[in-house]
Image 1 (cartoon, one colour):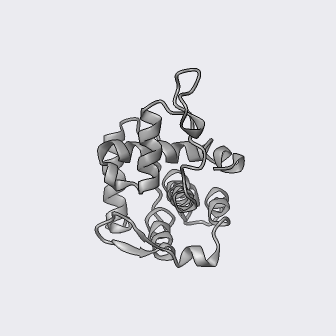
Image 2 (cartoon, one colour):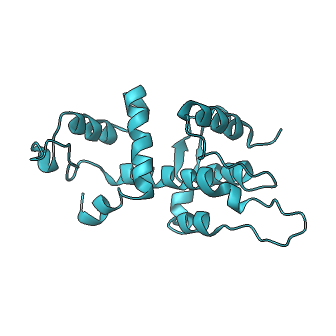
Image 3 (cartoon, rainbow, N blue to C red):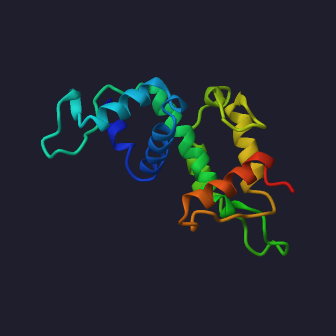
Length: 175
């Protein structure tokens, strides 16, 4: 892993990394093999190049995460952009005085290439199942950016937020 890739694990991506780690703790097979190795090494206190970190904190292993895992991290980051900021992009003003603010979401989508959109991913969503990324993005657009906005990240209780996310994402928020 190069320095640029290491830097990408900060900020919003740190939240994504935290979510991946929670998934790993609940079910290690829910993340790719690269992530399983990464988290296992972190839990064992291994630092860069597999050596124990001098301060006792687990460090980030160099060359442990493959480009496919970084792509997975990027996809999760995009989906979390919808979850965190989709309510701002929703078309909720019937008088059209204020335009929806898509800046944050569009910024995340700008990093995608056409071939990325054709990548097939397992969404773990019972309705979507295994599908192309472009279909997942379309589903999240429908879920978070139509005429119903839902701000959910103010919910402190992770269980409540997960419950709401599951209900919204399993129906594309169309009741």
